[in-house]
Image (cartoon, rainbow, N blue to C red; front, side, top):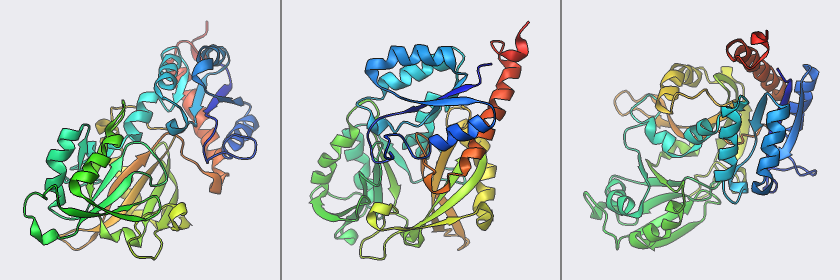
Length: 355
């Protein structure tokens, strides 16, 4: 087995340090080297895809993807290359299809009806479906629409009808709606028709979609981000929105306050996640869990029992950062080596099957 790992990154974006690569990639390299492995960072570009592919096949037993697809002009070529690498024996951390399955907003809809997600969740892939169904769901109360792309709250809108009691089963297209974007908590006012037409941009392209969820008022108590290393909870971030009118965003840019907790401080949530891993994998394509991923939860109140419940709002699996806890690089390196040792037992291209 080649004891070498390639870490893929993309140039640009706000997640880079002074030397152009992610601040949390070099610690992974250092931790792997302490365990007798080597690793390197390669910046992916479509122009160099063939050369990068040949280099990785020749040198590496595994890759770790640290690319935010938003930093690429198109993610198609990148994912095609990753699939070819996996097909030819390079361990994908994560597999490109797992990255898509877990990271896309419709992952939440695929989990509805489980302990993680309520049934009142929908995904729209075209304008006709959005225009037909969203006025109906909006008549039930305040909603949140999330685009599939973007980051830091961009394209996540809280939508409120200005005269909610006026509409019973479907909000009229000329109704005035108040809109708040999670990027910075700014508000706008449009007719519903104008807003739906504005949302066409989020439906364009190969991965265009919109997730429609009920707005949970207890977001003001904070969003709970669970950092996962495959099936292990390693860290929890409590993100409390700014205490200003209309604020519901849990991003640092919007003024939210972050608190870093140990998993032991959230035992109930930890138990829910552990019990849900099997159904989560089954609903999202039966892929191996991503190496590093997060699940964001919001507190809600069970109408029947009055007890707290946790609602999954989003999963991130493309390039989850851990710059505030760089010591996790040791856990990541241990997990990589454990995965590679297990793979060598069943993969006849590697050491355990050499004759």
